[in-house]
Amino acid sequence: MDRVVFFGSGPVAAKSLELLAKNFEIEAVVTKPKPAHHHGDFPVLDIAEALKLPVKTVSNKADLDELMATKPFESEAGVLIDFGIIVSQKAIDYFPKGIINSHFSLLPEWRGADPITFSILSGQKQTGVSLMLLVEKMDEGPLLAQGVYDILPGETTPSLTDYLIKLSDALLVDALPSYINNTPAPKTQVIVKPVSQEEVCKMTDKPYEPTYSRKLTKEDGRIDWTKPAEQIEREIRAFIEWPKSYTTLAGKDVIITKAHSVPTNEPGAKPGDFEAQKDIGVIMVNTSNGSICIDTLKPAGKKEMTAAEFIRGYGKDL
Image (cartoon, rainbow, N blue to C red; front, side, top):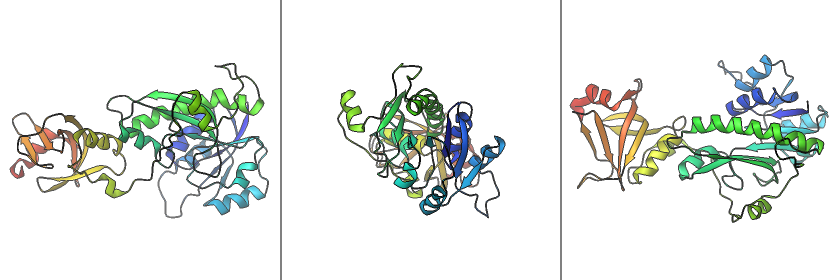
């Protein structure tokens, strides 16, 4: 069983670590420290404790460099998933085989902080996972392996994340031992070696055109009804956890949790105009192209409810 050092901090890292530990010896887990004021779960630390794994905590790039200067690890490679800290070339070079980053997109597509959300927002049909050798430049390292996933209709950021975590683990199990030991990978019988992203694009007959995601803000969740209905519906699925999709309806602040688009507009209606069809429990909101039919929503301070339940509770204001 190959030994690696795991770098990760967020919830995706925690689930990935739990899977990785089934097939690799985890020499140590490097993660962010639990803040003093934090009283809830801290997933990576909780998983590491449950698995009885050694833990090193760092808060920033300088902390990580100081840790690596003590020569604390013997592993040939590191694995980095959802770490949230910039890693210097000095830290990368500490490992003879480098640090392998599992990035949840088909690089060079959606480099940056939030590739899963932007895969849904774009309306693309496929995404996947890329195993990349970490370099200092953002997500520009050579690739070891890629796995493709067909995005399902109605896919949300949480559902897509869950699948890509499993795909990431499968790629690591197949490709990482081959890369570390210079032996054929079980599935392909080919020795895994790094290939530049430009070369991968040539091999797959795709143009080399990097795209970039970004961190979302609370303001991204404010629904702009002048956008097309199909785009707003994708935003509702993509923003389901953060920043959520919020608007005002019948004078109430609400978060829309599920909706579907229809291709027609209400004659004479402007974007943002809504119609509550009380007899069938349907709320339709006009957009610049098509309409949004609200399935479920959550008024401020209330539990999630169906459009029909909202109409029954707030019908006098509709």
